[in-house]
Image (cartoon, rainbow, N blue to C red; front, side):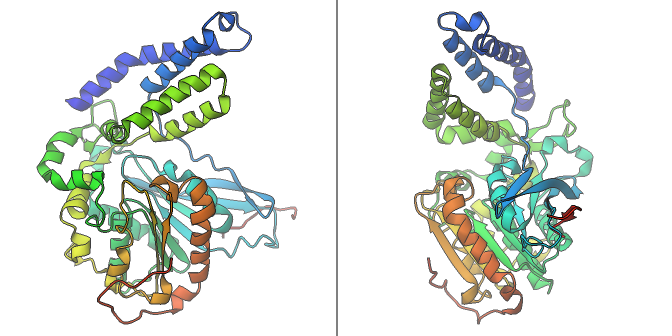
Length: 443
């Protein structure tokens, strides 16, 4: 009933939020007599804040229409490479007038960015994609809101997630592929590539794993502790609800986005309160730049999706409670996940010093599991002063993290295909810190 009550409350609030938006425009528009009244700026600011607190937040667009390469504007077109019920594989295809390939973009490596299916949309990685595009051909997993997937499409489990990743790798081709996984997908990506390696399939040239829960026993965070201390039935009884009739996925069991959002805010309520208060003050003062920055952040942060119940409960059990991956006891569709089988791929792990979602050591633990990866093909980076989001978005990502990721991918784009594994080691190694015609440059 909770989902139905949420929808009822949302529909009841809708007229008031729309009225608040109208009032904000009336009292805030330049040149109107209402905007010249005493206190008009405060009325407009208060109404806009009320509107933004109560409104619905739809999935934002990636809106990446061009990138700059060596001073040249290169147009970008977003295309669907594969369309599955629970995920679209998107490709950001770059175009140029340079038929002679002076920019060198035709020969660049291919990157598959695996976005989290953990509440927010893949657009949370917009900055990640935009930064990668000048130097790489980029694909991304665009997970579908489960409430929009008809119940007839069937369930979606963690095993299905892994199968999707394997299909995407095969579709793109592992030849010059580098997989970048951010947060939650580090675990299923490692499983997917391990299974492919065990079968003798081609594997990607490199794996870049960022802020992920490979082994949540290392430096457990509040998120880890919550998942570990509650029994699985608690999550199923308290967090799983049925999609109401007004959505295509009616009748499907999900972990609703609005509950996830409540959890996000509850982790740092004071910070969100102060952010909204600062937004109100910026509007009153006329500081439009800071106000616009607030809007951009919360347009993304408040846009959440429903997760399939089966997938969510699988993740709680496998990753956070039973630790099947580091224990070496994880079976997927009858096959044992063995990261030691991975050979010919390079491995880079990245952690934020202040990450309060995936603690220090959780991602680095992948090195202890991937014992078939040669020492020369390993790298680890701890980003000082960075929290969870700072390792894949924002200034630190662009200036500190990305240059190392770019160089790591470039250094293994050819070498990783020919280099084979060193002998198995029982312990984790020490890690060092214009023409007339338009042509497609991505191939």
